[in-house]
Amino acid sequence: MSGVTRVAIVDPFDDSRENLRSGLLSMESVWLEAECSRYEFFIDVIQQSTPDVAIVSVDSDPESALGLIRKIIVSHPTVDVIGVSSRSDGQFILQMMRAGAKEFVSLPVRIEEMLDVLERLHSSRAGKEGEVRVASRVYSFCGSRGGAGCTSLAVNFATILARNPSYSVALIDLDLAMGDADVCLDIVPDYTLADVAINIDRIDLQLLKRSLSRHTSGLYLLPHPVQIEDASIIQPEHITRVINLLKLTFTHIIVDLSKGYRPIDFAAMNSSDEILLVTQLDVSSLRNVVRVMLSLNERSGLESKVRVVANRVGSSEAEISTQRAEETIGRPIFARVPNDSRTMLASRNSGVPLIEHAPKSKLFQSILTLTEQVTGETAMAGTPEVTKSGVWSIFGAKK
Image (cartoon, rainbow, N blue to C red; front, top):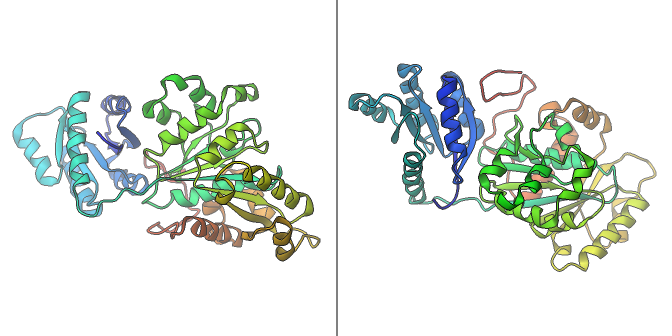
């Protein structure tokens, strides 16, 4: 199968859901976007995860499952539905097909059979008129010094994109020693970049997707190593390999670089479409911008990718004006993000991104504008209104 098929599954039975999950995770051409244990929440799961294929196990409650299939094809007509069941009588299978399922697979799942079914559906989707896969874009964030606000912008940029149902977004934390993207998102990861690097000789899409942690916004995080000494394991070629694999299934990849401008950072920059250089409007930061640009100028093609973002504008009466800053660095300031340290600090400390913590704040609105300016698109088109009423869970609960 060329490309990757993104799948969401629903099965109230734990054992058969685990069988289904394990089978799908063993397939390199499949990306398991979400799994759900209750029929009544699966429409929301599809809305959030935007899969290509929805797999509905009907054995728990056939009547409710058939009703769910009918709802899926009405509310999400571009999603192909596969019905799975331990029953195999023709009348029952016919009922599923009449409800809207395009394929049927028997439980327990046989990998060969599921692959054949997914291949047929993939071929069918590829043949539809007007189908165009969004080309993956890679954005790297780097700072003119530590504390410039690079990670905060990268995390919020990524979560804004992740809320668009047309996008799939991954964030890589390359600040290997002192990164805190996981803290900003209140994620306790099971795996990190170090685990990927240790297994780099056999890394594939299946292993990589097991290493990602999913945030409630829909964003996937590949975090920095837990142990600082593990940073030495990760090499530039590892980063290039990881980014290339992620580009197979994600529309947007965000990389939060380290403050040290090490070889792994330049590997990420080489793989990036755009580089956002975050600075503050003080002499020290702006001089560092010049130093960074001189270094990038020596590396073919990197300087042209850079857009300078002034962060925390208005934080001091003594800060340099935009005009003088542009004269100092010899290039335009692409965007200005206002200072609101109280809101940003509260967001970081709570592990809740601004899109949920303070969506009406000027700070969030400026980052939203930045995101749209960089991508050239309306970042949250088709996105349901964001509220602080609760965090959506793929198992249906509000936290």
